[in-house]
Amino acid sequence: MIRRLTAARSVLLIVDMQESLMPAIEQGQARIDAAYRLAQAAKVLDVPVMATEHVADKIGHTVEPLRASLTEVCNKTHFDGTKEPSFERLMPVGRSQVVVVGAEAHVCVMQTALGVMQSGREVWVAADACGSRHEQDRALGLARLERSGAQVVSSEMVMFEWLTHAGHPKFREVLAVIKSKDQPGS
Image (tube, rainbow, N blue to C red; front, side, top):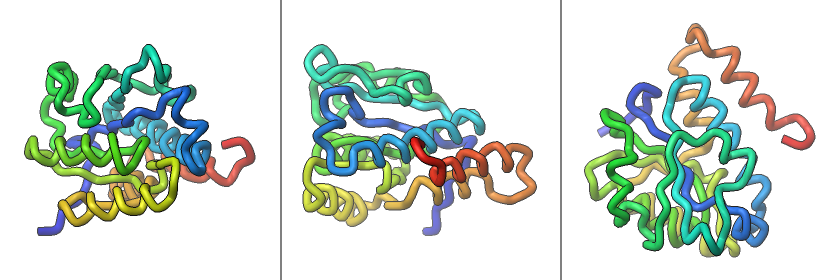
């Protein structure tokens, strides 16, 4: 079965991109930048942006500039965010497609994405916006997700799929977000 993303059915889920964790993540700033561009496109296209925060009192909150984009936050102690009682209450109704980004790809991202799939939702994992402390762990986590049925894609693939065509009324705004990766400091 061929599955395609639509902005109207999507939610962006940012897993544990937190203040004390991200400096330890390999290519952490690049992962944050990719997630930020995706969150900006989501905002333009009215896609809700949800985050999980793992033991936030110890690891900190979602990093800026991502924090400003959030619609909902699920505080958690489980590695799989879907195990938290508040997770399902925070998920937007009618949104059956979940685009997942975050850290660490082989732990909380993988376990949460597997939980989302077990709930009957479709999962797309934006690989360029997922990180781990070690590249091998990241690669193994993404490979397991793909074998389990998640679509492993790039953030740019997601944005263009949300748009569907160049005549989309928000095309120029999203294109500006996509091109922002070529600017220093983005």
